[in-house]
Amino acid sequence: MSSFVLKIIAIISMVFDHGGYVLFKSISPFNYIGRIAFPIFAFQITEGYIHTSNFKKYCIRLFVFALISQIPYSLFLSKISNNIYVLNIFFTLLFGLASIYVYDIINKSNIFSNFKNCNSLKKCLGICLAIIIGILGNIANVDYGFWGIAVIFMFYLFKNDKPAMVISFITACIIKYGIEIIKYGFNISYIFLCIFTMLSIVFILLYNKKQGKKAKYLFYAFYPVHLLIFYFLFNII
Image (tube, rainbow, N blue to C red; front, side, top):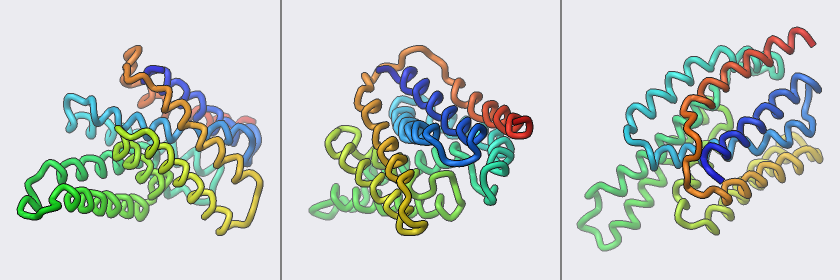
């Protein structure tokens, strides 16, 4: 399964998620399907980091579309939530990208070179800094919060260890929805949301490390456009 196919699956899932709110005005089976989207996008951001030929341009592109998408995202949020002061998913991806970058910088540096376990120390410091970035993202109120940034980082941290990637991701999903149940009380919908979020790892494991068709700006442009369309549909339906 190529990167292009993964993105198409994520986009379709995202349409189900947001379209579900338009049709049902609340959590529905459409939103269960929608849980597949973010983990795939999170995984894709790690692949983008690994394969980009220009990290600076990659960051700028994400930031520009984060700014472009914020008004459509806030308009859409105004129809489904009382809290419109949330930064859209591009900001989440940016914070996740920053956590990966900082971790890599630390691990490639000469810090702790005089210590016996310098590599372990560098990894620990890199992970600590990534956690701090995740906390900052949570304070900034990005979509999916600390959890979203952590998932991006974990996909990168365990990129060469598939069992560890699967175990860490499933654990993160259980923790996320376990906290939701503790905070808001048990609801069967949390179980289905958790299961479908975990289901995304199946598609990720099928990734064949090939790009497939080139559509660099497909997701970038689709995201704000589809949010605006759904916002207007809210006012019609």
